[in-house]
Length: 388
Ligand SMILES: Cc1cc2nc3c(=O)[nH]c(=O)nc-3n(C[C@H](O)[C@H](O)[C@H](O)COP(=O)(O)OP(=O)(O)OC[C@H]3O[C@@H](n4cnc5c(N)ncnc54)[C@H](O)[C@@H]3O)c2cc1C
Image (cartoon, rainbow, N blue to C red; front, side, top):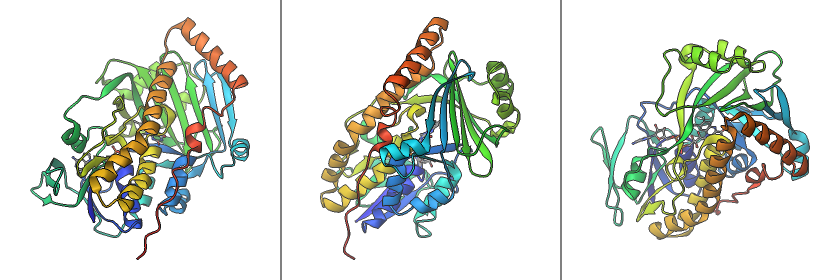
């Protein structure tokens, strides 16, 4: 069987590796002229690290990543520690070798791409149409190229062309807040292995250390959609004035052209991810707001489950339906929880925020971090052994 994958992001590359591991030929088509990723970091929870081990790339990713040692959630513009997580204690308690690894996105996709034979990923190929869902899918590209594989998997992100071919056009849902991201040198006082999220009123700031003595940061703010400031750095400095150190330092030390802004969007969960021999995975299937840090992690999980179904069911259309049924409950739950968590984090009223922060403090004392970590403890399982 030969599968065409559209998109060489985290989902597409992981899927190509997993499919090849179970003896299925995979070609990846990517619209960008070369392998590239936005200049930001990503946290990989234990569930993703396990899935990466299953497809055989865990060690390469670990070599380019930093292990989390300590995490904090702070309230009142970062001035009050609300919850502290000691990674070693939690790993021991939950029997996990590691809870989180942090990595630059470019290093993650490079580590994945290095596990594919040269020529597997073909760049400069923008998919513009998918037809013939039930017989032999026909894929067309903007450069005139066409392909007719046994199956097509759309791993082409939240604005997926393949998803639109399956489900029809539908606008993503705007969360009500926008997000800036950047990478800067690790400020004094932030130790390697640290992850922190600071909540204020209608604003949040996140700091994640990554290898190379750097910090990946994000900042959110309630805003109308599609906004742009004439000077994003000046806007951030003003919006986060008075926040605890090192807020001012990270904005000051990130080059202007390395500050990225995106509105936070997702799509409400759906139960159909395929039509005949054409399906979707990753953000094309289950885009989620980033509040639980699980979008990329579940995209990696998808690769294992997809390969398992395609390797064990000769009927491609049925395999894609079974894959969807396997994945919808978990990814839908994450989508909903992440949406709610984001709404909570973006509360703006003075009294509401005071109550929110008090409730989180109490919940942390009474329930502890177990509920928060439940998605990280998920085990996606193994790949079937294929006789060569
Ligand atoms: C602010 C923010 C922070 C996040 N933090 C985390 C985190 O810490 N942990 C985590 O697990 N997740 C996180 N996520 C989510 C994560 O980034 C996504 O879930 C993940 O990137 C999805 O990967 P993907 O491969 O499905 O899609 P994408 O990363 O969107 O990749 C899609 C690929 O398809 C290509 N493509 C698109 N259209 C076409 C076409 N027509 N033809 C050919 N190629 C095409 C694109 O160029 C791209 O290479 C975060 C997201 C945001 C916005």
